[in-house]
Image 1 (cartoon, one colour):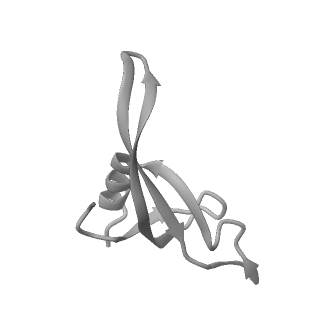
Image 2: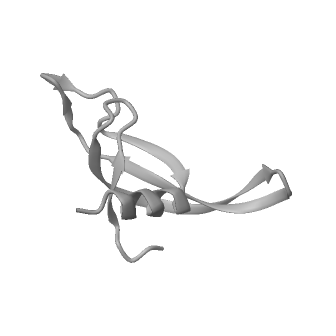
Image 3: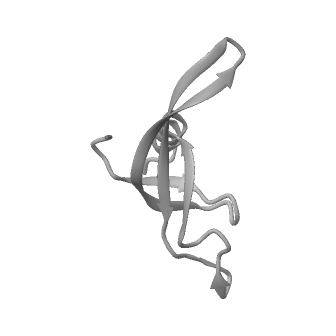
Amino acid sequence: MSDEKKIKIMCKWCNISKTCHIVSQEITDHHGNYGIDSVMMAKVKIHKHFKGKNYCKGSDRTITMPLDKILKDNEKNKD
């Protein structure tokens, strides 16, 4: 598990960087260009947030993303 549980990712529904946290991690097989690769996937919980006056469609959801992409985005969005 990564040391830092709280991360920031871009919400794909409202395109704003939001604070999230990693719920769990698992290794899955991915059929890439060079055969089968093992990829570390992370389940990420997006906290409730607003888009305008209403809750965003992506708020309070759990999504699955590759862990290396999350860590790369976290470095890019670091304050």
